[in-house]
Every structure is written in C-alpha cells, then in structure tokens.
Image (cartoon, rainbow, N blue to C red):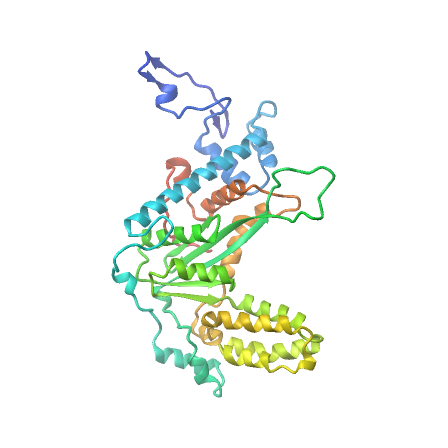
Length: 411
C-alpha cells in the first residue's frame, strides 16, 4: 500500500474458498498496482499533480518517503491520476443522470415532463422605478428613454444565480508521431474543456467537462440539486453563436433565463474588427469613440446604423465591417444597457469565468511543449475542480461529491 509516509505491506487471510480479505475487503488489483491511502492521494494528486508536472511530483513524493530507488514512477503516477479523475467524471455523469431522470429530463438534457410551475416562471426583475432612477444618474437625457426600452431585463440579484461559461483549449497529443519534424500540412488539434462558474449570494461552484452540452447537463442537475428552481439563471458569455444557441436550447423549458454579452469581449471585438475594416488608426479610433458609447448605453440599432453609414472612402475592407454589423445584429438580444446595469450594481462581465479557465486548466496545462490526450486533460481538470469546490475530502474519503454551492467562497 502506498501511503503519504511510505510504502507498506500487510498480511491477508483466507478461510477456504468462501472468504478472502484480499478480495472481499479491498478491490482486486492487477499486476504491480498498489492500494493508495487518502493521504497519498491528497499529496500526490491534489497538492502535486494539479500544481506541477507528473515528473516533479513523483520526484517530490519519492524524496519525502525516502524512495529514490524503487519509488513511484512518474508514468505510473500519471496513469493513477488520470484514472482517479476519470472516476470523478463517471460519478458526476451518473449523479447527473439520476437527478435529470428524477425531474423529467432525458440523459441528453431534454425536458420530457409535464409542465410544472418552474417551467412557467416569469422573469424576476427589479422595480421599474428603481431602474429609471438609476438611468437618470448615468444616461444622458437625450438617449435615456431609448436606453430604457432595451429588451434585456434587469434581474433581481437576490433571486438570481449567475453562470459564466466558456471553452478553454489545450494542445492535443498526436496519436502517431511522424519522423522528420512537423509537416506544414498538418494543423494543430486541441482538446476542448468547458468551464462553468455558478454563483449567487449563498456561494459558488465550478463545473467542468468535455463539451458545452455535457456541462450544461451538469448545470441543470446542479440547479435541481441545490434548490435553485425559482431563481433567475443569468448567463454571461463571450457571444459565441454556438454557445448561446446551445444554452437556449438546453434551457428552453425555463422562461426565467437570460444571456448577457460580456462587455470586455464586445469592446474587444469592435476594436479588432475596426482595425481591419478602417483605413488607418485615426479613422478607426474616431469610429470607436462614437460606437462604444452607443453600445455601452445599449443602443445597438444606432450602433449598427453608424457602421452602415460609414463613408466608403474611410473603409479598407467592407466584408469585415459587414461581419461586425452582423455580429451586433445577432447579439442584439444579449446586449443590455451596461451603464444602467453598472449603476444598479449588476454584473456586466464574465471575468470570473475567465479566471476559472486559468485556475482549472490553463495554469497547469498551457505551458510550452505541453500536449494532452482528451481523457488526460479533462481528468486532471476534474481533480483541480475538486480543490476549487472544496470537495477533495469528500471524494478521497467517501468517493462522493456534495455537488452543492460552497459558502463563504472568495471566487
């Protein structure tokens, strides 16, 4: 048995063919596998592998246990860690399946039930007078009424659960390495992890998995498991078309749901597209000075009109400019009046989701020369998420996850 202070051997007992402590008490192992104590898993997997490379972790734990010779090889540690992460994923998938089935959903997250009250929930929003009072403090009088007509509602933060969701990609390992270096014709391939950060006044939780649909199924189960039905679900995204469409499709059974286009990504998109579309930085900056205030106040129609009325002599690439207009048109239902939301103390950003991408995946898996298999990347991210969700003790001691919001969380 591998423990945090060393490797141990113990005697097993057998009574005839009916009882064998090596098989009836402990799961049977194959080859030269060792049982691992909770302490070993915490040190090697939670504090080691999720923070640094498998090689460095193996060197550390073998040095601590005075096993420089005959200790745990880093390849073995890697296999054990990926296996443990796969067990976490399997547990989460099974727990999600049971919760969805109990509440009338299929395994693919499609609602198959009869129409309970939560399906007919109307949006929970702030009082109209409070919204107008905020608008009077931050929006110019000549555009105030138009800003107040923006279709994106203002959720009540006390009855809202915020969800920031995004993909993070790491380089995928090549199945077969070709001799003679990298071929110019081959393109880099990636492993896609989807990270969702869920938070409200009670706490926070981070979900991760392979693909948007998988994580949204986890999210539906998480909502039911935490009694969040009746709360508004407010999503914050980067405006990716597939992501927004998948969210709306998976949550078409719930009316009290909304999507906000993160301001940072909207501003970044405008800057990048106008740099390619306009002739020179002077014209580009002048256009931005007129465009961004319109978008900040939720005047998407005026912003699109401004771009469509640009002088041809100022345009370098009409197709890029047209793509920006199409982008604004497609995301109009998700562009609120950011000025009023800020005055009301509501979120405009998905930056906490971006931070979770860094903490769960990027800091460990995006270093020079690193590449990952799909199971290896997602499994390691799952173990990292255990730490963020303070589920390490539950998992290593009980092989269970509470799957509940973490109170008093700073993230």
